[in-house]
Length: 66
Image 1 (tube, rainbow, N blue to C red):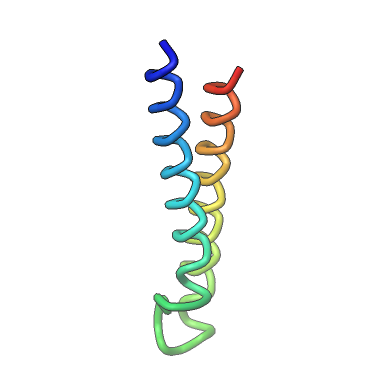
Image 2 (image 1 turned 60 degrees about the horizontal axis):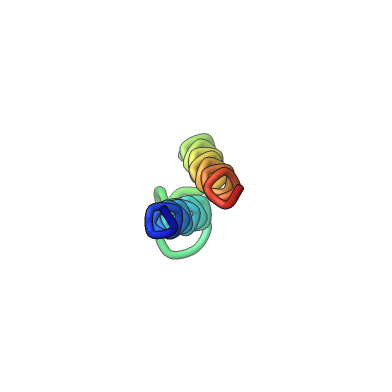
């Protein structure tokens, strides 16, 4: 039982880290496009999607630790 909970926490931690990377990427190392104004909404949507993934990872970790 403890191994299953530990595995869930590790997997949710990886999902949390993935969400953070997806949210930060369009602003730092993975530019969406060279012209700032043309892809403004694409960058915002990618940031919101990354934040949602990170939130799901955080909630999953919280539930696994209860």
